[in-house]
Image 1 (spheres, rainbow, N blue to C red):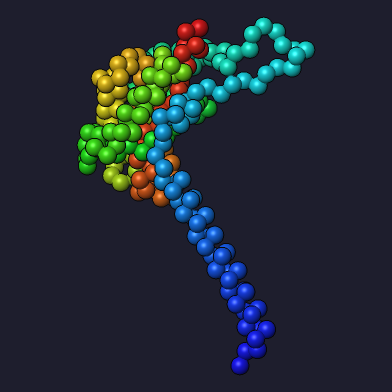
Image 2: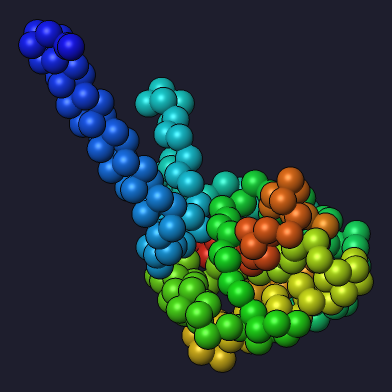
Length: 224
């Protein structure tokens, strides 16, 4: 039989373990809720806004400081060459050039689903596309040039997925043009099929079926 003192210690230990378990459960619940939160319009704007340059030291500061780097002539030429181009007209070499330029630009991945075997935006994803439309016409971003890059998971052939990703990128572009009056020349579309999986360890995962939005040339840089 357990002595009274031992019982007291045992009860205290059980109480502490219960409190710790409850705290762990609460923390897990918070983490899961955050992970499942939708991306907000404000988050899209912030993700696509150019990052401020680090200020120069007082002794080296000459003239006004801006948040925009000097435009790269090669990048400007590439972006101008694909403005207004049909998505399917881009060669594989051009798609890779665009990807190379885009990799260091402000960007965000949006999980936008489509009807099965279709480029029609699903009803459940319309709110996400509408938030994107409002974000791209925000005064902080309006007038910039955006890349809409379509990606698929690994199901199906390369040709099938390439075509599907292009049609889906076009679908987003046409929705933004028709509903938010964004100029066609400010929206560059490209499809990458299953060639650039976000999570190669899970090739069929939903995370791979996405639209990547990239601010290729912000409004002040584009006007220089």
